[in-house]
Structures are given as structure tokens and as C-alpha cells.
Amino acid sequence: MPIRDRDGSNIWQRRTSRQQWLSWFGWLLLVSLFIFCWRLMNENTLWMFVQDAPRQVIDITDRMTPPRWSYMERLWKPLWDTLNIATLGTLLGITMAVPVAFLAARNTTPSDRYVRPVAILVIVSSRSINSLIWALLLVSILGPGLLAGIIAIALRSIGFIGKLLYEAIEEIDHSQVEAVLATGASGSQVLDYAIVPQIMPAFAGISVFRWDINIRESTVLGLVGAGGIGLELSHSLNTLAWPQVSLIFIVILGTVVVSEWISARVRHAII
Image (cartoon, rainbow, N blue to C red; front, side, top):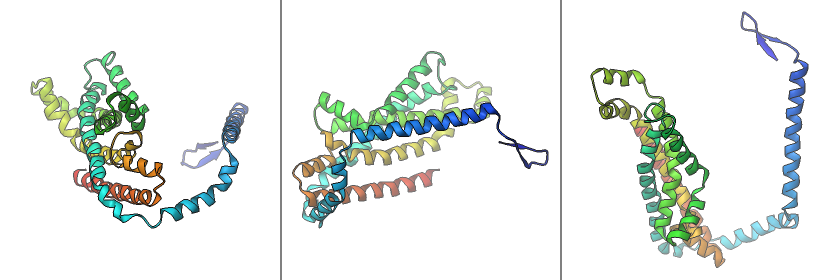
């Protein structure tokens, strides 16, 4: 292990017996975990299917080409629905995430002991459940359709936006807050003139970035009945219409690329 000399050069010293044992014990745990995971994977894997996978890939690829371009006229509305799910879900998520973020930040929460833990719990709960699981639950409650997809995207977005935003709130320059307080400003005025202006660039960047992520996630929500282009993908897969599947893949890829470009340009313009 190296230590620094006065001139900044490294002086190497032999590890102590305790450090050596801890190092060996750590490697032993890592190897044991790898062996356990490998055995678990082997128990649940049918290797005859794995060996046949290259032939299946070639066969499906051959069936998927060429794409059925005439099917494109039926994809415009599902694609528009997907964009609506992502956009409306993001807006709804922002509406719910902003107050949660202010309640979670140490310098803006009304109670560090009671309110902040609840806000943190909301953020963690939102981030721990995937949007596909939210959609599956909401479809069983609200029925299939766009509403379930929008709410699923919103619930998933709360944790992402809330976490990044409350961290940005905690990292603001407190000298500006003190300067506004010195003028005798009220709490709402401090929020308007000292805190919000500092976090607006971060807030805009976080929101656009989350919208870009939601575009990708909303493309698969139709697999569980939440509407959008994923619903057409599910129908095409169920009927083994592989040329339609390849076209849907191309449309999804193009949509994600365009949304990524828009997101990058907007973030660059704001930040």
C-alpha cells in the first residue's frame, strides 16, 4: 500500500496481516458469489435452446426482412399516442415532483424530522418501481388505454425528477438567500428571488432529460395494454407478423433518436 513522502513520491509498504486477510476474504466472497450465480443460472437455463439460438436469430431476421412499409399508415396514430403518453406523463410527474423535492431538501423542508423522511420515502418508492409495473397495475385498475400509461409515466417520473431537483436545491448558493433575507423578505419572497432562479437551469435540464427517457419507456407500455405503439408491437408479435415487427422497431428507433437530438439541443440551449 502506498503512502506519500514529503516530496509527494510514493513509498510502498507491505500490508499488515489483518489487511491481507481482509483482502483475501473479500476475493473469496466475490468468487463464491460468482459461483453461486453461475450455478443458479445453469439450473434455470435450457442449454439446448441456447445452442439453437443462432439458427433462430437467422430465421427470424430472414422473416423480418424486408419491413412491411405499407403498414406505416397504421402506425401514425399509435406513435402520436406514444408521444402524448410521454409528454403528458412528464408534465404530470413534474407537477407532483416539484413540491416533493422542496419538502425533501434540507434547506427548504418545513420539518427535517417528520416531513423530509416522508418526501424521501415518496421519491424512493417511485424510483424503485418500473413504469412497466406501474402500467400493469394501473391497467388492472383503470382498464386499458392511454390514461393508465400517462399516470404510470408520471408516477415513475416523480422519483427521478424529485431526487435530482432536491439535490440541486440543497446545493444552491446560500449567500444569495441570506442577502434576500437581510432585506426583510418573507419566506415566499426568498423562494421566488433567491432559490428558484438558482435551480431553474437544473430544473429545465432535468425535465427535458426525463421527457427523453419517458419517450423510450412509453414505447413498451402498450405491451401491457397501456396504449401507444407498444400495443401494435404486441399485436404483431402475437400474430407472428415479423415484417410489421421490423417496421415498428425502425419507427421506435427513429423516434428515440429524434427525441434524443431534441433533448440534447434543448439542454444545450438552457444549460
